[in-house]
Image 1: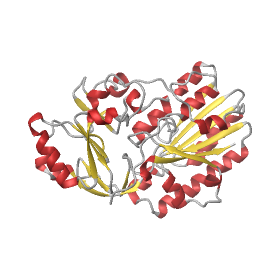
Image 2: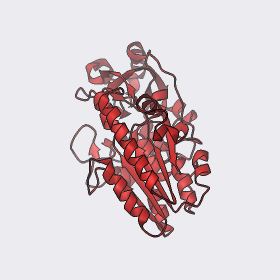
Image 3: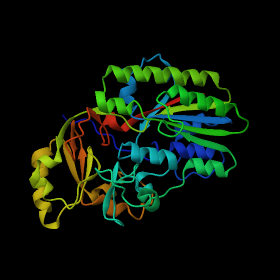
Image 4: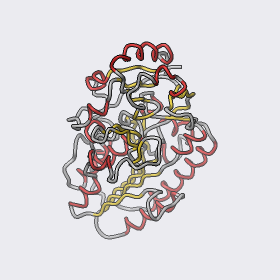
Length: 365
């Protein structure tokens, strides 16, 4: 089944939110601000706290949370993720205020031509292995960016980021709320960015309708809304990097004729595969891919991706074109094509369907 597609709006997108925050603290935005956020930030709040709940798209919020509950009552609007609608691209945009074509963190795995390897960006590993990509951090060396944390700190103001996998590690979002509460009580101005890795992990494992997802969202809503009610002179924003969609799956390595056409394994994401093809096998690959998957994927030449500005309207990073390869296979239906056989997530994200692309902006003023 094909789904309604939503294309990224780079004037109403997660890449715009950090630019509104930088502007609020007196800094220079990296790009366009987010009008919804600008309207909320007109008051001179001393503190701004952002909770990014990974995977909590519009459809997930509507499926699991009551209309009269704290999150939906304080919903200021719906906006789009980046393309790809995935954590690496979207959270890097949230950190930098840049669009994916600008910062170059395009997906979970990126091709880096300087070392001629596919690299799992967040871990600096060769794709699909535990082998370091190099004896230095490849993504941060070749695709560095200035975070808004750094920008705000340069203005002489407090700015911090918390995540569950950084010390002190935690598996309870209540701990994150406690840290934010303590920071907001300190003198001066504060920007606090909290990244939380659920409901994404639960959605991948259990699916969009799972009771585990429902219970986790209720708990997150309770903890964050409780914090917001306690704080004064503080704007609390809750958002997501992308949504989720339950999918079926196929495994690319089960199609040896397609594999024989590839120069290297695909990069980016299983919902949007980045394809580098052997010159003499391109025609066969296109026909065979479309025969097998054409009802649930669009096979898009890299030039079309650039022309349509799917990954951003800004000045592309110097590596952007080399990272794109020849084609992007973009999911339009409920099929995910994994590179390997071991990953069998129930729910996935990365592509252009409505459930993957639309995210909420929730504001407690």
